[in-house]
Image 1 (tube, rainbow, N blue to C red):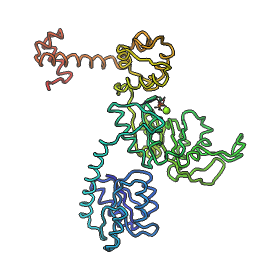
Image 2 (image 1 turned 90 degrees about the vertical axis):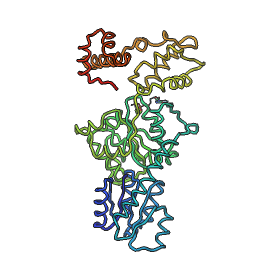
Image 3 (image 1 turned 120 degrees about the vertical axis):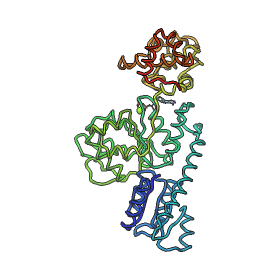
Image 4 (image 1 turned 45 degrees about the vertical axis):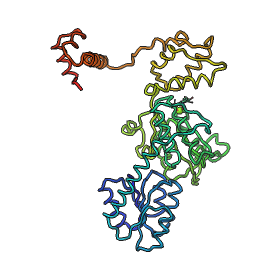
Length: 442
Ligand SMILES: Nc1ncnc2c1ncn2[C@@H]1O[C@H](COP(=O)(O)OP(=O)(O)OP(=O)(O)O)[C@@H](O)[C@H]1O
Ligand SMILES: [Mg+2]
């Protein structure tokens, strides 16, 4: 569980943080209400421990603001003296409990553990019930298989929160579609959804694209212009292919994420922006950060929440409904695949994922005569596709050998004489190979 501790007294704050960290919780401390709200906007917390009396904002004010952002947040208020008045007020505001100063740490731990139990039970319940009603949405996402259902359920739980999301997945897996879905299911749905493809903008124009520029800021800047962050005010900005963001610009993006403001090129003035940031990548950002190609601090800011889109080859169960969907979308008259042709499609690994499938259907529909698509109508690369993905030959051969041994043994109830006969090898060789591949019964 992630806990935010808010207290203006440093001794009390450090004591609580130290104690809770020892208990294995992830704890962030804030010294006043404003900092607490900033931390809260940056990353999710399930529980907040709030000092009731602080110089800037009171505990109740902070809690009320936080509850607006995350109504499911749990809170324990810490008050200087017990008064029924405060207790009632605090509970009304949605605190689950309160404690008196000096804090009895064991009582605190007990209360936290109780809250934790409730949070877990609720989360499990919501995991099961979350289904998105797509009928009201202007986009359609196909995916009845378990893998995509999990993605959709995660997206629907992530959508209402204010946190940055990093969407990962191979090319063509539907990252942009999921980003749109998150925007449409969020409280910002009536605001703009602004896309910026970090891979498609020349490096020298990047800063002005993102943050805007003032008139005369550089040669060619005849008028002042808003950047994409400003255009996404009260909405969502989608930073596509974030792995392509040039290193020199990364600190500027980081600053915008931290301070929620931008400077146009050619101006020192801070412009506040209220924008939800979604980013996507098909690159290995972990590896890029270790190689120094992507800033680690920016990476952590972007991936407060993460969604991973599985490649189409790992969710082949969705292929038939995707085919039907794309046929419907581009077909003038009803067209369908016969069973053999569909089987061929399902076997193909689709390295370009859903986008490749979509283009393939468009191509076939344009060329086909008649209303039924058969194997012969499929392009040769799909019909004659063989499992020839590159890899070390010896590894591939060993894995084939291992599978053959296993299946011969299983077919013969692990009687080695029979299995070796079937395989055409001696029993001694079979035993040697079983040892080599670590094959054991059960
Ligand atoms: N589950 C899905 N249901 C329906 N259409 C989909 C689905 N997934 C992807 N598509 C379609 O496939 C195409 C590619 O999707 P999208 O652009 O979202 O992928 P991407 O992951 O952003 O790709 P890239 O990495 O190349 O930018 C789009 O036309 C999109 O509408
Ligand atoms: Mg994309």
